[in-house]
Each structure stands twice: as structure tokens, then as C-alpha cells.
Image (cartoon, rainbow, N blue to C red; front, side, top):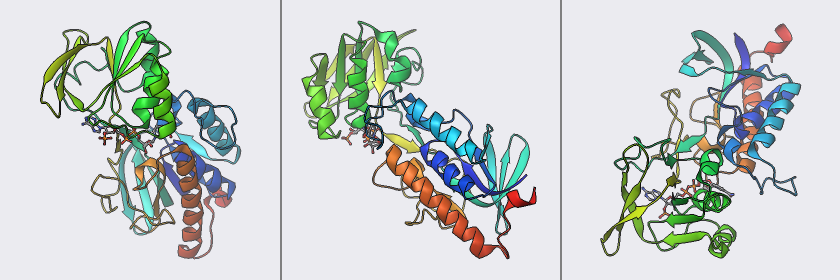
Length: 315
Ligand code: NAP
């Protein structure tokens, strides 16, 4: 199978790239191994994506983006990519036992939650340890839950959890939150929210389910036990960079380095959205990245192929 542009990942960055690429009459395929929409699908209320006076759910927003991309002819392939390489200028993707070739590739693989990496965490995932309040919050009606982290995700999701839980205890390793001020103020005003400062979780206890968190105060070194019914961990995100072409330059955190054209160091390969080394990871920045990447890919194809042979024109 041959395409002009292959987009890897169908979050907001990939969907936006697909809209621009397909609308530009480039034969476009979008690969997604899990759920179209990416990380934002679990966000119940996206309040800061321009154009929606009232919040819209991440699921609805990305489902609409997909329909828009399909309207212009983008093809969605639900397969996990198992290898990525090059044949001269051509990019080769292996997925589901088949090979797909493209003139240009746009990497939009996004990011995933960072684990705390403490004893008990992995064993108790799905048994009280969660990384998704939207998915699991309703299980904690009238219960006491902890949220670990002090960023936008921890505080926004903590506020969301107060809809169900009787108490939400935020455990943060410093004495000041990283989250945006408007979100912080909302949390401080919420009577169901409590804060434990300068503290980290060093162990999660429980036999068949979570029972308590072992905490250590980073200033006093005092150890304490906090009984909880559930714990939601939001301590940042890691790049989903497995299986990327090995020559692509990454920063020390593993995020793909691009220039302002979303171009990586490998000709014809672009990156957009959360996978990219960037200062802001939002739906609006991801979609903007996707548009720039698709525009750049189109320019690169025109400049690097003898005549502008659009694959779709040959079919
Ligand atoms: P983040 O901004 O990186 O925050 C991670 C938080 O976890 C920080 O408070 C950090 O503490 C803490 N942390 C990291 N490692 C830890 C560890 N081992 N133990 C305990 N605490 C630890 O991550 P995020 O909140 O997931 O947000 C990711 C990106 O998405 C950000 O750019 C954010 O602005 C964006 N986002 C935006 C919105 C919105 O605008 N509505 C919503 C969600 C996410 P320190 O503060 O001490 O470093």
C-alpha cells in the first residue's frame, strides 16, 4: 500500500494533520493502535479549546475531528505499528503483518502517564490505583481518594473526583502547586478537597485492593499512613516514542525534536502534538502542530518528487 502521507497516531495532532493532508488531496492514512482521539478522550470537559463557549467532551471533539478528516478522504487503519524504516526517501511502516509506504510520515504518537514507580503501584492498578478519573471516578462514590501530583491534570481531575468522592486528598511533593492559578483557586475553594504538602508516596499497601498509602514528608522525613479507597496518579507524562525510526533525534526526556515546520532531523518525517519537544501540551497546540506538519509534508513532497504525483490521482 502506498500513500503520500502516513500519520501515526489519531489524537488531536494526528486528526488535524489528517484534515489538512487529505483536504490537500494527498492520499492519507492514519494509524491508531488504540482508540481514535488519544489522551484527551478521557477528559470530560475541554473548556479551553477555542470555538466552544460551553465545554465539550474530549470524546465528542475528537470524534468530530475524525469525521471531518474522513469527509476529505483520510483512511483510518486500526493497527499497531511494529516497525518503521526507510528505503531511500521512502518511509516504510510495518503494521499487522503488512508493509505500508509513504513519501512523508507525521509522528503524532502522543504521550502516556508517568508511573510513580513505588512498591505496590503496578500490582494494584485497577484495584484502587488509577491514572484516569474520568474512567474510574464514579467507582468512588462517598469514598476517600488521594490524588498524587500538583500539575493541571492532578488538580483538574481532583476537582472532577469531588463529584463522587466524599473527600479528595491531594498529595504534592512541594508546598506550592504547579497547576494554573485559576484551577488552583477552584480547588482551594472546594470544601471536599484537602492538601498534604511536601510529601511523597513511598509505598502503596493493600492485599487484594488498595488499603493505605505510606507517605514521607520531604522536610521532616516523618513517615505516616493514609487510609484511602483509591488513588489517582498524575505525576506527568512520558513520550510514546517506541518504534520510531532510530535516526530521529530526541531530547533528553525522549520527546522528538523538531523545528518550527514540525520537521525532524530526518527528511520527510515530521512530528506534531505531545510527542514533540514543546512548551505547551494542549489540544489547541496539538491541532496547530498537526496543520503545520501537514503543510510542511506537502511542500517537502512537491520539492522532492520529480513531478507532484499524488498517490490518490493514480488509483
Ligand atoms: P505536569 O505539569 O508535568 O505535572 C506533574 C506533577 O507531578 C507536578 O506537580 C510534579 O511536581 C509532580 N511529580 C512529578 N513526578 C513526581 C513524583 N515522582 N512524585 C510525586 N510528584 C511528582 O503534568 P500534568 O499535570 O499531567 O500536565 C501535563 C501537561 O498537560 C502540562 O503541560 C499541563 O499544563 C497540560 N494540561 C493542561 C490542562 C489544561 O490546561 N486544562 C489540563 C491537563 C494537563 P512538581 O510540581 O514539584 O514538579
